[in-house]
Image (cartoon, rainbow, N blue to C red; front, side):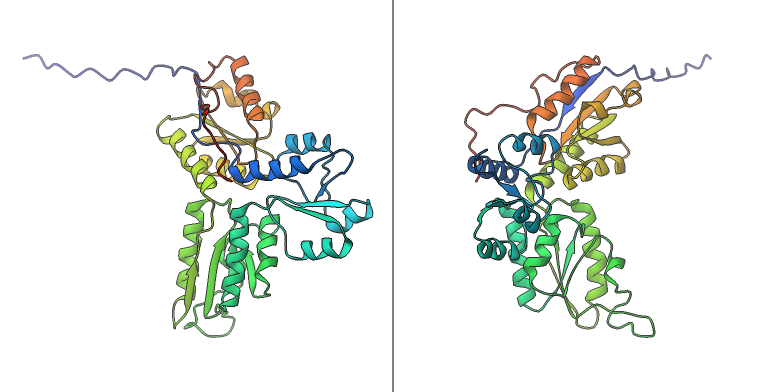
Length: 333
């Protein structure tokens, strides 16, 4: 009797080149709002000095200079150069900015994202209720600095690891070298952080605070646009099976950096780039399906430049462009 062996599965054919654009990418409504506020107020004759970058995108910062908008590192620098109009960026600033502007008799233009304002006010409220405030985020970031300032207390700290807080024991675990957290601890987050990483941080911190009558309050203040862009990136990986992820945004952009990190942690080669010139030839040599995403401060034309660069390298243009056009779109602010 002849045994018939099953046929071996055919080897996977070479995948066709294509570009897949994330369903949610680029400008969020908070960034659009900030730019609208500053551009409507801008005039080459009455220059504006934002304290820091209006948004973390170098191309936009350069364009604004032509409209009389020139970022300065701090309030004193703007005053030394004779500016009579200053702007608070989308990342926010502490309450001292308004006081300094009023004392100096200069016009203050506030473009703080309302979602950042929400975190600032939440930190104030929690501090009044007696909580030690923990902000999950980068202590050098202007948004985090603004939340710390608005909390109005010295009992507040930014950290991305629980070990950075200086607590190494629960309230029940006493002894030499053991430092327990206060009885009441509240956690908020920088709006542009990774949701999964925040949740892991929250669980670890809660386990440290809760024993022996501790009280832990957790308010997830990661903004919806950040979460939407991270979910859209996951779909590029899981549904579109992208070989390569290009996350487009300024090098200072925290949320763009998070997108590249999420891609790499999912096992997909991912890079944070600012412009087409950042794309290395070897990235495209063996990667057929390229996923495109962009941070919340990245304008559409910068995204389009990257897509056009890939098309020039032999990738078919995405059928619907970088985003569907909604003729009835109305901004949410």
